[in-house]
Length: 443
Image (cartoon, rainbow, N blue to C red; front, top):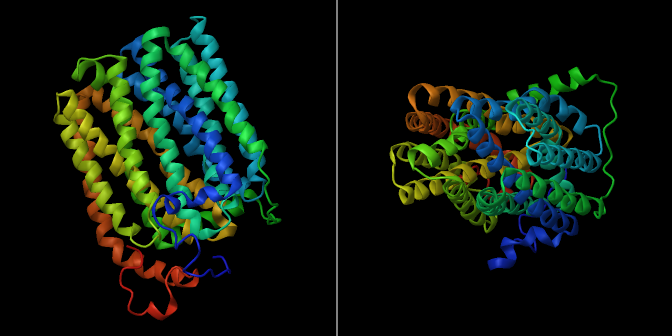
């Protein structure tokens, strides 16, 4: 863990209201990142919805929706852990510039094929897999890079919450905009807009002034460092349990979004606009969740949010599977988005706070593996199960699994709190004089 002990009370911590909620933006590099990435992510969400609708329009197959989701995420599962070893050796800023440039090329290729009407399901699968390979390096790099953009660790939780807000603002705007663009011009223009939007984040990265971080030079092989990272993750109970719950929810719960075209088209009798509304409602719920996290002044209390939000997500999924009314479904997926974001951001903030800096890249690669890497199996499973028993029963089963996972985590919470307490004391998050009587450290 870091040897630097910060005071539990900082100028940022004493702020209130909106200034406190936006305090991470006082860091210039994070402001640049926030602006550029917001524009880029709107395009990314347009592409995600357009890809799903394109596959559904071309094939009408729930199974192929799952296959495309699997192809787009399985490279992350396979390569992210090894990418994490590289990230603990390389300049993360330069890695991000390269990954964003490659992602831009991928979007332009998808746009060109679609606009010229040469697109087919094989090409969609190939380009989705290429994007997944890029994400294997890009996502853990972005997660680990946050601490370089936000130098004051007291602002780290706020930066993660604002990043989540940024993602979900884009989730709200992107699908709604994509639904309108698809209806007017087709999916190809969504991909074109996405490619152009990458210029914003590339420009923001190049404009940053990054302090050089001394990299750890080692003669150890990649395999040795990989084993060291795995031993740390599997041997430290708080990170192990949080990542396990995160992975299960990613496997069983999050792939409900892959089935959204079926709910929009067959269950709710709508079209691309309906799909945009459903995905937008998920984004609203997640945005509200991220905003609630942004106003928090401390990491304390986040531990309890993990089982509560996971259970809320599961309950909402069950009722969403039962619904046949659009406005009811919109309310339920809003709750899904809220619970999903609470669980993800709380897990991320706790892990980023307690992880040892020398292993940050590797730990965040395992986080990415749990976040994105498990989703391809979930997408494949959800697509196959929906093909067999129908999409509604599939999401109801997913909801039940999330509830069971929440109950299990709740039984582990006391031991997690006990393990985290000394780290919070060392970091100054909890004053040492209160350590003996503090019973809600990790909550």
